[in-house]
Image (cartoon, rainbow over all chains, first blue to last red; front, side, top):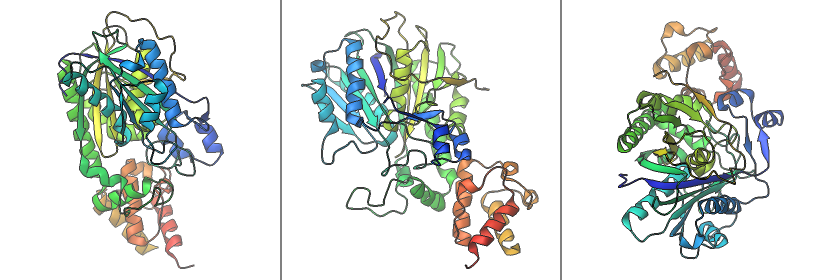
Length: 365
Length: 79
């Protein structure tokens, strides 16, 4: 999407106090040693008492407070999630808007799988660009992945799921100081890959009609029918297109020294090494930043959690840029280019509840 | 066992594109350097060809092809 001018972002995340290390999962038989090695996580946050919409409210309150943004000025509250939010036939977005006192905001739920948080930012940017009177918008994401419905360690290939919430306030720069400036956002899609999460399963009349969520089953069906190469090639092309477009729209070359980081999704280390890093490294030599080793994959919130880490730490110096990459089942990929404002804003008084431990790797390109 | 080995090697060479010369009973999966999707693909192919499930996690880097042949043979043998 072409931005007429940069858009302001304030972002935060909220993690539950519970945390399960990979070692604990191994000792408990929830994971085998080879998978642990391939995933490369230190551990994941675990929310046994906090419901996802409650976590989203906690993340959002801190962000609105920091930004000095009265909730009643919000025009949209978009909530993206992947798994059960705690009630059936009920609107988690309305709950979040109500708890925040966002009385004039239209609450909308986003079910775009794991790229939903990024899609929410895109939608609010469109709203701000299309309606000069629209107030700022808020995107929240929140999920928890508990048995018996979701095995966080073995429910899917190439990732372990962590519990937590994110909130991103999307606003005009003229309204208030921004923690980050959004300079470009580019998304690509391959809707024909939705079958990877459906496989040969039939349509069911009730939730969990196929039993506990096991994404490995439909993915095996997909590979049996089409082979794994179809996904790898499609994903690589889509990632290249999104990254190339985002860099171009931001006016940055891949080797621009102002581009400090290329931030990775929060998937397992091997999956990222095989699917995300090769096309990314072709287009930019920026240092790759992996912020997910202590959070796991956060459902719809990976990209938004990385924005939160960039917004609430000194990873980016004033004037530096980061390209943040994400992907989600369906499939959709998004690349965003953000910049730390040159004029430093006041530092957050309420940082993320569990800052990620960044690990980075210099690319060879 | 010989038939199982021949079929497994045929999957690896014809579907996975691995040169036949590299396929020996003492070849390990580390030698073959298959990515994770290829290992799932191999697991799926084994299931289709032999009617048994050898989970991709069982196709660990240190595992030799001869050992996988034995696993398939044991699982496929009537109880």
